[in-house]
Length: 238
Image 1 (cartoon, rainbow, N blue to C red):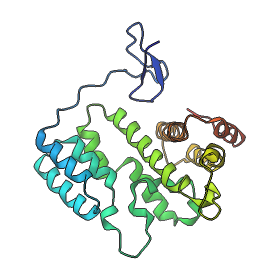
Image 2: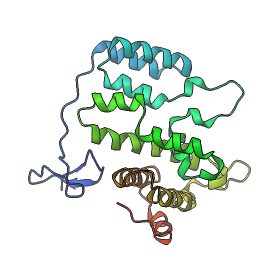
Image 3: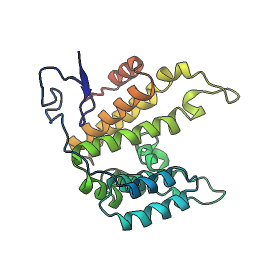
Image 4: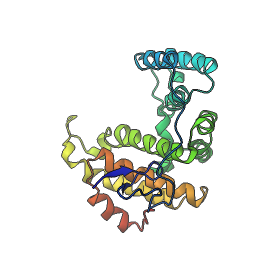
């Protein structure tokens, strides 16, 4: 059986028989072709990838964006860089990390309400994101991929990377227990997303699907504990 991943919802689809639409989300399986990347753009992207300093990387990408305003790959790198170039020396400010926006669903009580609203809004509306959506051959597919990438990064940095959730002792943790240990905080996030009345229903569905699929990907496909914890909280996965 030949399977492909739907570019919109990410679910595996049997591609045999010339199927053109995803049986899960109903959207077309093929996306319009992306604009070719020039050698000059590719050179900029390679330099950005090799640069550890976020300030230098931001300057490089910003200058490149001005030179190549129709370049989606460059715009995308700027999007995911977030505000990392604004980090202060000697200060711990997670908010400069783009995926930290999702913390409003993990630890909303430690974030001022006004900031929660701003972070929620940034998830779906920001100049960097708007530019990428305008340049993308398929804006819906790009939005789904963007949210999934943020969720993957959030799981790695703020769940798997946290001794609070991984219950590390003397800095040691058993990664084999991660699917079970991270199921509870992830299920709480799903429940919070489901109940977020400030988002439209399509936005809630898209965000919940992105988080569930990210957990599936980052935790090796072991979602049994997450399914159990989610059901206990009344989460209805889209």
